Image (cartoon, helix red, strand yellow):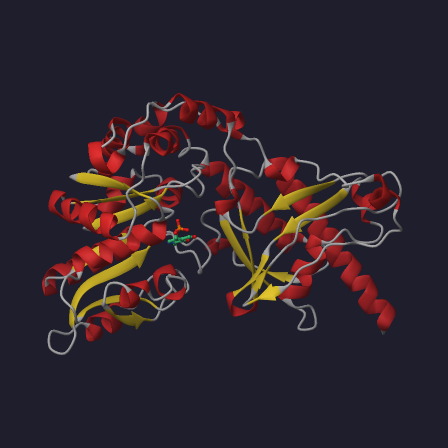
Amino acid sequence: MNIMSFSSKVLFKFFNHAVVASSKPVRVRDAAAAAAPAAVVVQWRAVRRYHNFRKIINQGPAGAAHIRVVDLRSDVMTKLGPSMRQAMMKAVLEDDPMKREEKVHGLEKITADIFQMEAALFVPSGSMGNLIAVMVHCRERGDEMIVGDMSYLHIYGQGSSAQIAGVYTTTVATLPDGTFDLEQLELMIRHNYPRTRLISVENTHNIQGGRVLPLTFLQEIRALADRYGLLVHMDGARVMNAAVAQRVPPSTILQHTHTVMLCLSKGLGAPMGTMLAGPRDFISQAVRYRKALGGGTRQAGILAAAGKLSLLEMVERLEEDHRNAKTFAQALLDCDAPLFAVDMASVETNIVRFHLQEPSFSPSEFCDRMAQIGKGEEAALGQGVQVLMYPYFGNSVRAVWHLGISPEDTQLAIRKMQFVASQYLEEKVRAQ
Ligand SMILES: Cc1ncc(COP(=O)(O)O)c(C=O)c1O
C-alpha cells in the first residue's frame, strides 16, 4: 500500500482536532490583577538550556484582558481533540497485560500492517520503546550499540541503556543532516572487547532540526549492518513526518531497519503511547521487558482508541505542520531587520532551527522577548502574543509545529518575530 492509497482511506480531520492551546485566552485571574499597573509578570528560569515558562499572568494597557499563546516549544504540546476524546470515552476496557486487550491488539495489528513488519507492541513512551529495543537486541552484558552523538537516545535517554540494560554505547558523529559518515561508522564496529550488536538511527532527527534521513543512507547502513551481522533500530519517534516529507509509505523507509519505535503522542496527537515494531520473536521478548520495566498498561484500550485515530487520521495532516514551519522559516529570511539565518533546505519537516546573526542578541534573549508582551505590542499587533520557543544546541533557537498550531497562529508568530526584531534594532540604534 503506498502512502497515497493509505492516506486516501483516511478522513482528513485536522480541523476537527484543532482545539488549540494556543488560541485559548489566558485570563487575568482577578480584577485586582487586571487593574494593576502595567508590569509583565511572566517569569522564567533557565534550567540547563531550557526555559521554564511559568503560567502567564497578562496585563498590559487597560482593557487588554487576554493574550494569545503560540506554543512552539515541542510537538509534545498537542492537546486531545474532540474526536479522540470521544473515541477514548467509547473504548471497551480490558486489562492489557493479562488479557491482551482487543483494542490494543487491533492497534498493534494496524501498526504491523502499515509498517509491513511481523508484529508490533504498544508501550507507554518513546523512551521505553527505545530502551526495550536496546535490551532485546543487546542481550549479553558487554554488548555494544553505536548511536549518533546528537541522538535523542544518547543525549536525553538518561543513560538508560547503561543504567538499566548494561549496554555499552559508542557514539559516531551526527552530521548536520542527521546521517553518519559510513566509513567512520565502520571503523567503530568491533568483535573483541565490547561486541557491537546494534546501530541505532533517528528519523526524523530531532536535535538536527527534523531532518529526514535519505533512503540511500538507510540502504547503505543496512548493507553495512548485514555485512557485519548487526541489527538496525530506528528511533522513529517522528518517522511519519519523514514518510510524509519523502512522500513514501513508512514501510519504504522501514524496509532498511530491523525494528522501529514510533511515538503516537507527538505530531500524531495522542495523549500518550508509542508503537514498537519488528520481527515476531523480537516482539515476544519485548513483551517480557515491557513487563520488567513496569510498562504494561492496565485498561490500555482507552489509549489504543486514541492511537488508532493517530495512525489512521492524523498522518496526512503532518503536511500542514511542515508547510507552517517553512512559512515561518521563510519569514525569518524575509524579515526587514536582517537578524536571522536559516538554511531553508534544512527545513524538511515540522522543526525549524535558526541562528541570530547579531552576537549581542542571544537565543535566550530572543526567546525571552518572544515570550513577553512588549511595550507597544498590543497597538502594533492588535493583541498581546506570547510565542514560546527554546534556545537550543549550537547557539540556535528551535521552534516546532504541531496540531495545536494553525496557519493563523503561524502568522501571529511571524508578526511577533518581526515586532521583536524591529524593537531590538530600534533599541540598538538609540543606544549608539
Ligand atoms: C527522537 C525522539 N526519540 C525519543 C523521544 C522520547 O519519547 P517520550 O517522550 O515519549 O519518551 C523523543 C521525545 O521527544 C524524541 O524526540
